[in-house]
Length: 166
Image (tube, rainbow, N blue to C red; front, top):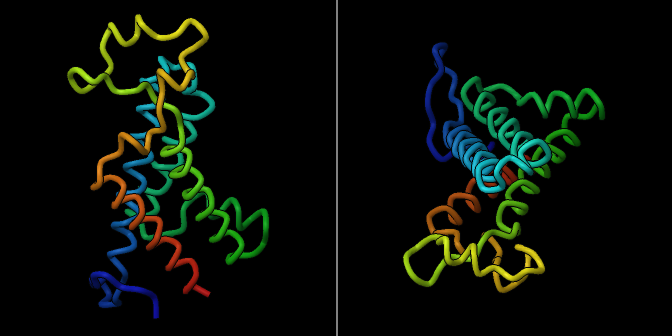
């Protein structure tokens, strides 16, 4: 029996797992927000390669959670591999890779005065580039506990459901 956080009923009285669907919806929304943040934060330079695919994956997860059907990416992978189990694990890998990238990417270091990057921070960046360690840090250092917990829980629920769906 799959892991159930909250049970609900469909119109015909069958039980369904609302918890994993809610987890998938939250994960999709955070992927959309991250993709939008990448597009905004890089002034569109990484939007085509990173931001838009991340937004598309998040929208795919949201529609999958709302319709309670496999995501488009899952269907595409299962059509390619001809194996539902492989497709489920590959789709989980895509979601996990998006999360890992989001936490590992370099972001501008927060100013010690105020709470965000300031014009003086931008002006005082080293001449050898904005990816220098004195100007950047990993995004996970700026991630709040609630966001980090949400990401870990949603990925954990997805992994548990994939492992027990055999």
